[in-house]
Amino acid sequence: MRRSILPMAAVLALAVLTAPAPAAADPGPRPGAYRLDCQGGTCTVLATGKRRPHHVEEFVTTVRTGDQVWARDTVYSRDGSARSRPFPRPAGDVTVDVAVTSLPEKLAGTPLRLMAWNLFVGGTINRQETTGENLRQMIDYLNEVNPDVLFVVEGYGSGQKILEGLNAGRAEGDRFSGVQLTQPEDYSVNGDNLWLYTKLEIQKVYPRYADADISSFNLGGARLGLPNGQHVNAFSMWTWHDGYAFGDTHDAAVQNTHRLPRTKTIEQILDGDNLRRYGMGKAILEKALPSFIGDDDAPVLMGGDLNAQSHLDWSEQFANAPGHGGVVLPWPYTKLYTDAGFLDTFRYANPDAGLYPGRTWSPLSGFGAVPARIDYVFAKGKDVRVLGSRADVRRLPRHQGSPLDQTYPFYSDHGAVITDVVIRGKGTGPDRTPVTEEPGLGREIWPAPPPGRRIPPSELTATASTFKPGIGDPRRAVDGNLTTDYHSYYPEVVPQPHYITVDTGRIRNLSAVRFQPKLRVGMNGTILKGVVQVSDDGTTFRDVTQVQWPRMTAPNDVDLKGVSARYVRLRADYGMGGASALAEIIPYESDR
Image (cartoon, rainbow, N blue to C red):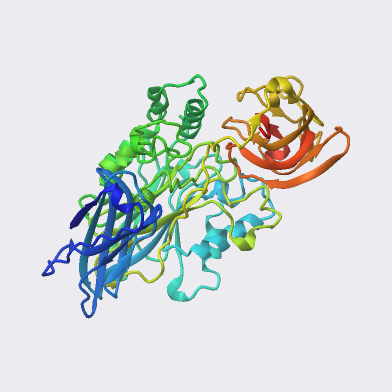
């Protein structure tokens, strides 16, 4: 493995660093020649190996500062070179590790696309969507992803419909088999839970396992045969949601960011894992899996909804990442899987948790103020190579704009995790472009204040067309207190649009207005679509701009440069749950 350190000063402009290639190839990984190219704040690694006829080169590139990994790529190439994905230049001295393995072209391995997804009561959105259209679109999306192994949570009565939909129109050699893993004695009130779908040969379905901590509601799987005669062990999984990892993390990060009193200590937050999840993980790793596979050293693949945050995401390395608020949480539950030799495939492929938060909770009820990655694909085995991973939280473009889309922007309340791997052995290696994650939202979770002078709360008053008396009074939106909210009255009584108007006291040269959604975990009322309007007299209003905001609790700023007005009004056309809510409306005026 070739390593070289690039001082920070050397990459301020375009930097090129080349390491010499070895004189002779070894049977295993060997160092490769590479060049680190940095333009501005973005870098890539161009690696080259010794091109050999009828061979495939496997390049593994790792970029780090000290022990902190920031970028990683595994690329299979037939032309003897590979370029990494772009990555932001890390601060400090950058170390690049490049390992190259030359493989005979017929021994590059078997590619597999893995997918884990909680379907939210079988694609019915908790039985709120009764037409079947969401399930139809969900199956269309699954066929678009086209996984080789699909780990399903909350099949809940839709398992056979999904299997039929996956196979509709497929050629004989491309068809799925499906296994209901949760047995009747372990059903919940909604019925079955775990399913496993695969294009591979199902050689054996493992029998029900149950003890004081888990049952087939939590874990089930099968031995799957690969086309080359090898096999893998695949398991769908679900663990308990009590000890609300997202909610406690969200509150801690918000409280740190805004210097509010903390409601829980780090120890109290981490203790949520110990209510049930930690015991479940111990049972899965130390009892159930050994009972299924014994001393079989074939790869183990697992996917599902853990209802747990990752210790890899909330480490000291990412304390100041967007939305983290300086919070460091060494979550004990997910660390169990790392300690047992499993790769968290998403974080392995996307090691920078600030750039690639990988949110999977929740495209339906809102992403809140912090990243929440609670769904996973795990892999273990010396022959497993992770090529790429992504998290999907948005409907396919062809499904966007449908009647379902505004209320349900994804097919479930959980995002889906998709990972491409190669299982080393016979086979020609990757046969399609690996999935890749898009960088985060492209903006800070807590952006700097907009330009201008903040108009003090003492100079503001507010009125609204609808509000809950007392707890939802519009005056709470201009009181300077982020912990109090304006909230509309019940939407079945007063449907949208709703109006909330701020009186700044006199006509002013405005520069911007900040709309701060409520900072609670429950995001009902978070405004997603509307129109910002202004007025000189409070009677005649003129439109400034239409707004469309994400399902997050981050502040939304609207540019008012050149606007002169006394009143600022938001027409809330659509808010989550049909309601409208805001923590603060903060107008700014030109300081000139």
